[in-house]
Image (cartoon, rainbow, N blue to C red; front, top):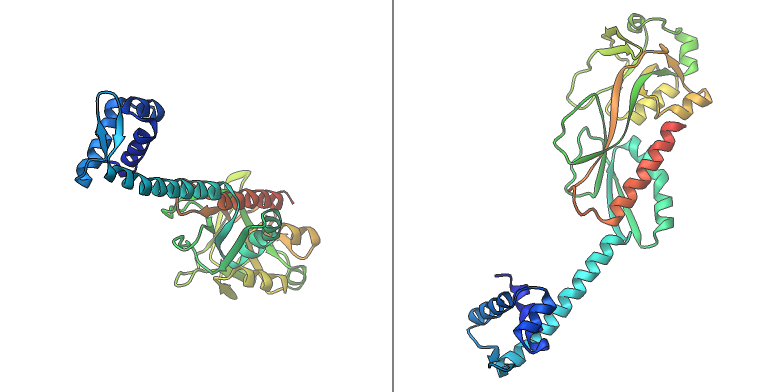
Amino acid sequence: MDRIQCLRAFQTVADAGGFAAAARTLDVSAASVTRMVAELEAQLGVRLLQRTTRRVALTDEGAAYLDRVRRILADLDEADALVSQRSQTVSGVLRVLATPVLASVLVAPIVPRLIAQHASLRIEVDVESYAVPSVEQHDVALFAVEGTVDTGLIARRIASGVNALVAAPAYLQRAGRPAHPDELVHHQCLRYRAPGQPVHPWTLWQPDRPNATRQVAVEPVACSNHLEALLRMALDGAGILSVSLDLVAQRLASGELERVLQGWVTDHWSLYAALPSRRHLPARTRAFLDELTRQTAALLQA
């Protein structure tokens, strides 16, 4: 028995003055209304309505009960309306988890726009280094993966691209520019390494020549699980780094970094937004994902 439906049936019968009229109001059969009221009376162990062939009247117990039922159903309707309205309004606290580089490049630029557009929105950004995020305490968790990885998370893909090798002009002037992937073994290389994981050889290929693939085992002069730290090292001339071309597009355009081994790439990557659930996303989460998608597309087109 759905207790709320039974309460609504009882209230509607009392207001409409009969079971047939209540059935028309609720758009159900008269037999259904009769059954719901009977089940309610059976559970309470008291008669709420006095039935005659001509009319239906409240008993004393029914009149007292109806007064409380009205308040309960009114409070429930108000709560439902409040939650429904909030789900359609960009408000409340949005909790975002991101790695340092994603927080800096993608999240930070869109926060001012979101809070300017939505006065009732508050945003909390937690920044951590991780390979696969945990979404239990957050509304959205951003992560980038190279190649194809099954994380088991509920995730929406935001963008994808390729990694390639870059270095600062100062390094290339000092150490020379490699002409072939095999020459990387003679260069200072900077490598990303997840905690507890080995440094794997670089696999390089040319997208327009699928069979032109080279695997190069380089001994890094520095490695880290913090991409921003590696990028800072590369900008300061420490060596050659594999990084998303889209991430460093502005630095390539300004000349702070230069492409190494033009035409060769080192990996595919995809950016995902992990979510607690596929259904019933709050408006604040939808607004963040829309703005994130626009920000990412603008970055990729830069």
